Image (tube, rainbow, N blue to C red):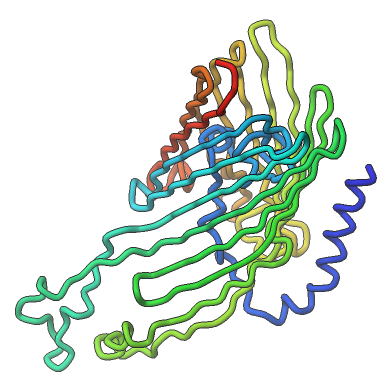
Amino acid sequence: MRFFRLFVFFILSYWAIHATDAAAQRVAKYGADFLAGGVGARALAMGGAYISVAEDVYAGYWNPAGLSSVSQMEASYMHAERFSGVVSFDYAGFAMPFSERSVFGITLIRSGVNDIKNTLDAWDSERNQPKSNPEDFITTFSAADYAIMFSYGKQLNERWSVGATSKIIHRSIGDFATAWGYSMDFGVQLEAETWRAGATLQDATTMLQSWSVNAGSLSNIRDVFGDDLPEGGTELVLPVLRLGFAKEIPLSFGGLLVALDTDLAFDNYVSNAFSIGKTSIYPRLGMELNYDMKLFLRGGFNRIQQLKDSGLDLTPSIGAGFLLGSAAVDYGFGDFAGIVSDLGYSHRVSIKYGFGQDD
């Protein structure tokens, strides 16, 4: 319990010191939202309830404390198509033990929309109509977000593990604007015989995100639309406390894993979530049924919301996976924005390989 008390003390101390400063800054609600979707088809099929479950290479994203369970080098990759294929998402991870109880991990993420049409140069502002051959002036660009994370997990004893992740993000909108952001996550896990608990303080240091605008590439916006040019600036992404609990239930043919996560966001944004005062609460629920730890069926709810007009709203996800020697292949399927949404479904496929593990 001493480690848990220290973790809670750090959380409370940090918010007490920085609460006033954050209120005076421009807070970006969706400043790093491309990271919120999660990684690993197994975790996503379980509704993202993975804070206490993470014990492999994917822990570098979910909870760095879970990296301490990695005993051999592991590599992973995931590709996802979101919003009916409009947004592509790619993830790669690597974890390597460098002592009996310490593991290093690295995570790479890219999320982007490619081949966006830029028609600004095809407009004749003097004549207030398109140029005679507008297709000759149409170009394309990409809006992409990148992240690199360096993680460390350490096992303190048979029950407790701790970890930290340092992350750098880079965002670009063609040649028009770019941003850099930096922050750290801290995690802790407690493992018992049939249950696990975990906590991650995401963006614990508060992510400072600085935007710069290329005024030259945007100069024709004023000519076409008569609008003022946007300006760069600094935004803050506030910390989020993510709590998780998982219970393993042995069965004659395998087992059942039930996991519950809850995110506590102190963002004063409560219109689409359960809330207590200025704290938004985002619960997630997941289950995994395994047959002899070789075949897996998964399901969950990655969003459980209380909407003002329509009441309780659930966003389900399902998936499956199997082990083939040292490789784990997983698939997840989910409705990205609710059953009645027109934004389309999301397919996720991931593979994890353990180097040196027994086939």
